[in-house]
Image (spheres, rainbow, N blue to C red):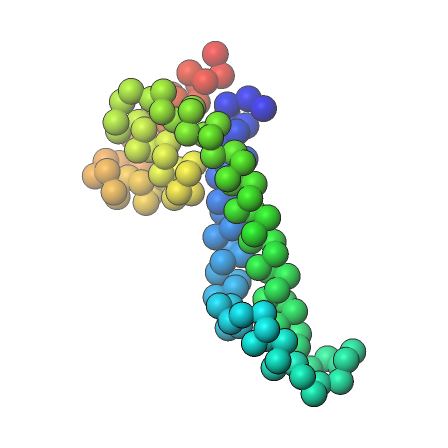
Length: 133
């Protein structure tokens, strides 16, 4: 995998994980041990479309997907760390780290660094161009 593809893949997985965590927070059944969630299903006939059972099943599915995303991120992390640790310019490092590792937008990064979004985009593009060479 090329360096640019690695960074893009990492960012995509971070964004996917953020979306899954947002969905999990809306489910309302996260954080409860599986035994508790299963005990809530005791007495419910199997195969019904009970809203509680559906919510628990959805939550379990989202948790499994989030776990897979975390595992993929953990497997890519050493490569991303090696790539970003070669950046000497602190401002450029912050831009690349915030954009690809933290999955922030160019506008958010510009606000944190007190520079214009155009400056952030220009520096990011310059870095990606240097990777492409």
